[in-house]
Structure formats: C-alpha cells, structure tokens
Figure (spheres, rainbow, N blue to C red):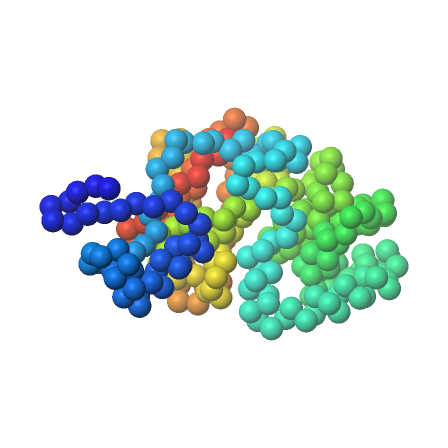
Length: 265
C-alpha cells in the first residue's frame, strides 16, 4: 500500500480472470461497498522484472523457454486469412493433400493456396523425404515473404535439422489492459546471419488498436525498424536480419504503456 497525498494505491498480483472480476465489481459499484472506501480505478500494471535475455539459437534444439511456446504456424497471417472468410478453404486444402500424390502436392505449392498447403503440412507429425525435398525446393522460387516463412516453419516441424528450416515461438503479453501475443521466427542464412520475423496480434479482438507500435532496437537503444497499427490492422509484421552473437530488443508500445523483450542470436 503506497500513500499518494490523500489517495492510496493498492497493488495486487493475480490472474487475468481475477482482474476481470475486480473490474466488473468496480464498474457495478460493489467493490467500493465491499472495501468500505471509494475506489477510483482498477487497471492492470506492468510488473517490474530483471532483464531476461532469450537466446534464439536454443530454439533450434526445441529447448523449453519459460513463458514461450513452440509454434509452427504464422498465426498473424492465419488470423488475417480467417478474418477474410477464407478459413474454410484450409479444410479443402487439407482434404486435397490427403488424397493427392507428392507430385500433385508439388504443383499445389505453386497455386494461390500455397500458404495454406504449407500450413497444413506443418500440422503433420511426419512426411516422406519427397515432400521434405519439395518444401526445400519451393524456398528457392517462393516470392511471397510470409509464404516462404510458412514453408520454412513447416520444413522445420518435419525435419528440424534441415539447413533451410525455420523455428518460431510465441508469447502472451499483457500491455496495460491489452492482451497480445508476440510471435518470433528465426531462419539461418547462407552468410551465417539469421532472418528474423516478428508478428504481433491481439488474443481477444479481431483488430489491434490503432497506434500500437512494434519497434526493434539495437544494443545502443537505437531503432532498427518499426511498424504501427492502423484502423483495421489484424497484425503487425516486421522483418530484420541479425548476425551471430548480436543482441536486440523488441519494444511494444501503446499510449503510456510499453514493454520490452530482449534477445541474443
């Protein structure tokens, strides 16, 4: 309990569900009655924590990282696809893959459904050497950045040691009252550097709030790249290249709230 002139601030630690319960009591006026004092506001605050640096190269060994979860789908792109009422086509693609030969599958990867085909393959637990070879070959001719990433992620799911495989993990982030999810994907390059893909999206709403910022900072705190959501933004997408042993910071900012995540290649 911290005193601030004639007002007191009470900081509680709990789950998001418990926060929503307190907010409901506050909005109904019951919270003031229960506590016997006038409650002016109930909101989430960011908890101060020591700087934790996530080593991205450990992800290729499928190591369990606290608060992160292994992911094989580009969830931002998938959510946007569903919002465009195209999600039913994913089921059609899955059925066509089930009944198709590997030669047909190769052809399908060059069609307009190539992202969904790669996505569906990533959901499988195993695949023939021919399919793995086909995915690797598609990376040589793929023109759409996110489709290339999805192919590489699916390749990583089916053959984690393949030199062209990518890996991704996602983390739930509470920013003020916003519930977000950050996806970070990593893919090695021939020059021994790494391609990195970032996607940020809401876990509760169809669109992100306008003016939400995603920034990448170098070790000196300078901005490398950044993006900002608009009025109808399903997700924010950023790409960058980092070299071995480089550190960088991902900063998410909205209004007066911000949070940072620290990474090492």
